Image 1 (spheres, rainbow, N blue to C red):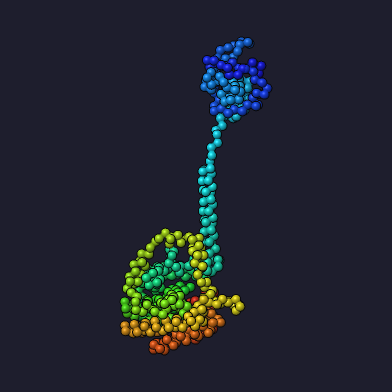
Image 2: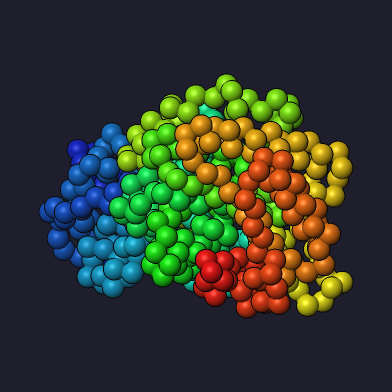
Length: 463
């Protein structure tokens, strides 16, 4: 076929007469752009001088090949097909076959590429969040203490397992009734459990003597059997009932007694006052409320009690609460809230005096413009409470928790608050006790780096 005269696609009635192919038009220079290589079938013609005739269907019909130029789709496909059919060019045709396949025009894929980039970004972000979540859970206790408290603590009302729920009407938090969980703060784990009323007691405990304090009496950092109230019950046989909660002060004590005293009819109520109570009163009763004291005459105490029972039995499960199962989400919330007040600032115990941080509660005591109104609030509320309980046959007592060994260098602040408590007790004829002598030179009575009572400290307090 190499010496065969070839002429270009001038055919009639579906037959080809092949013209001559020049060297420039050799198969090495062909570039096929056609949609499909047609099938060429030989027809008639034999002998040395005979012109081979071919039946070419489709692209090489007379109508399509009449005006074709060399290199266009139909003519090129026909000639290439002839070469492939010839035995001499069988191997060459097999090599050329991939080049004879049609090339589709590329279409713009901008939308698809953007979608793939977004999907890859979302998958990368998800993988990063999963890695962060696993890392936070693995090293939570090694992080700075205020961050660890946010991730592992249960002193909140915004996450599953939180021990509180908040009532907006009186602005008071309640602990969830019949709730049990493990909580964490300042490097210590302990088991938290409440009774049917939402206080930290065993079920069925007598309510003859009510104890009202803050986290020191609640038993922060220790299990139930090591709290002062449990020791008074089991070892001394006193029918005490612990109504203390973390961050409570005289404002919450007054409201709880107004809510439960008439219902339970106790014989005695004991108020525990700590050195940070003036600051807590100033925070909970800001502005005019510190002077007008609406809780003494204008509050409805039946409504909060009923809402506490309803919400405590069936706490709402909202999406926001379930999202707090994630440590990453808690980390973000803690960052938004400024991580709260670091426990080290509550009871600084650093050996280096120059590195001590002034506790936040010193501000309300050392400022005369604040401590004066706070003292007036204490005096008015205790006087009203003593009258309210006395009319119902309940004796009111006060205990001053002197913790100067847990906060060295702040003796003057302790003396000022202790003198205020003693003066109020004297004005109202109340029995007032102090723990100064019991806890003198007892460094191991306080949790290291925290300042709350150890099991030994709770035993001394009960004694």
